[in-house]
Image (tube, rainbow, N blue to C red; front, side, top):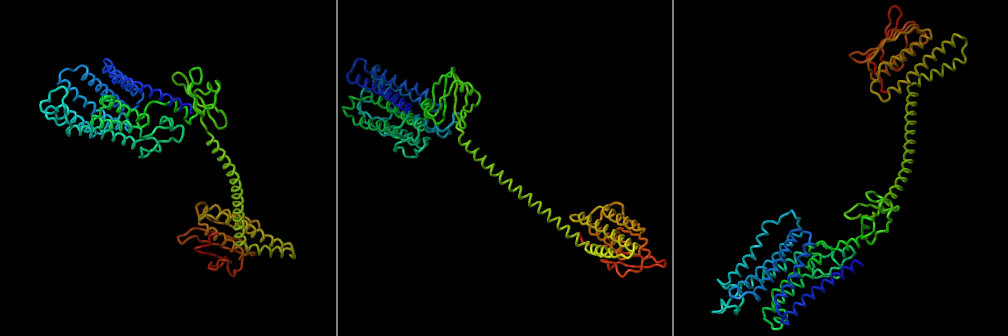
Length: 571
């Protein structure tokens, strides 16, 4: 609010000063003071020159600034031409030529306004499209038509005999109206184009609506509350009304404001300044006001850390905090960070509000804790499920082992029952031998169940270990046994199981009378085959689980068993 009050007060002082100068010039004209034309021209030159200097300092865009400065120079030229015509020129020809020369600034100033707005929405390094330079040909053609009026009188028509008089009677022709139409077209086009390209929010395409800023930052950009986007139309409307009244040659108007040149220069200047004040033309002013009402919490100090300018939301800082924050980041509280950086002649400090970030971190921390709890639950559930799957897999394998060794387990139970009622030591020893042979098979067959459960093929070592351990148990029972199998290589899991089951089936069919046993397993073109020769047994009725196994006897009482190919189910 204080910043807005200062800005309004400054603008009021400027407006009062300009009004005082204009009133002073009008009084000089009305009172017919000596050298009134010179003094009035001097006042107007000072006024427009001061405005040109302010344009040089305020306007950022180089091309726009150049257009406005050239317009100011043309207005100064127009005023000086008027002074020379009325106070120094003597010959009728010079008077008429100076009068025609008025139309050079009259036509070029509105054209420069159009070119100024063309540069507003373009970067300084980006040139205008070439077709827009054609527009400049219109005022050139018009003021050329005016300057050559003596040859054709298409702009001003003089009565016969007054063509070369100093103050002739004349009437307006269509060339004059073309000039007026061009000036009006440029003025209206400039205002409409500025409003359509306006970057002030909430303005749209309605320049007659009041611009009411909604926050302090918008007020600082626009200037202050109370400016209207239709403000540039006021001087344009004044110029149009004045031009109509001037053509009607009203006596009172000619006495008070009979100087067309001055009125048009002042209205042109007022129109340009209204566009700057409304923010339609961006200016290099109001930074301190904008900084004061900016939502950024900033502080500018001199080289001794004495505050020079502070925004409304900035917290007071101690010198120690400011010294520590130069080039670093200081934590003022849980939700505020202080940054500092040296600038020309002092330092700038700004306070960063991180409350949203802190709130987000708190939410993330809570979410992380919840996720950790959920993760622990999921981990426990996963571990429990894995344990359950492991137990299920073990139960499945144990059930499979029990299924494939059910016959052997049943025979062991039978032998244990018989062992309890054995009549003598020899019978008990024979039963123990059979229990050892069956137990060895159960052990090695269980191992094959685990080895072959997930594999299509297994190493021959597993089959060799199973056969050799069973052969060793036979030798412990007094039965000579030899096993011949390949020393290395791979064998299908189902074939390995079938070979070992065939070995066990032959033992079960030939016990207890077997004395010598030779077992061979090899791979042939038809598949894996087994051959076995047994001595000391009677002819068995059948081999359990292998009804297709062939049996032959020789003259020495040896039993030959063979099966090719030997196959079994995958275990």
